[in-house]
Image (cartoon, rainbow, N blue to C red; front, side, top):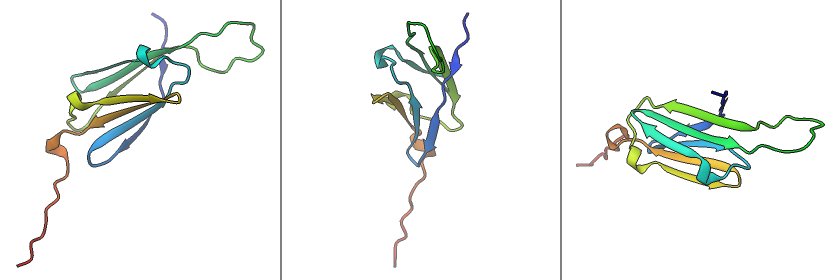
Length: 108
């Protein structure tokens, strides 16, 4: 089995969801495999190979993978993935039970 690059991610948490972004330029979004099993989210794919005689070679080519576990329950059925300008964005909603509840003060 060949080594896979650990895909770098940014993760932002707000009251409703986790928003995860990754740079995957040149990758066909239809060939990115995203799975959620147990409490683990996995993102897999492959950067395309390039042909030619390289004078300098710095860009990563080949398979990538990233696995994430969440420390709070999430709503796996509502996870959304979008791809725009080479940026993959995943929105992972928190489960209703762990969202903060706003309590209104009633004046008497």
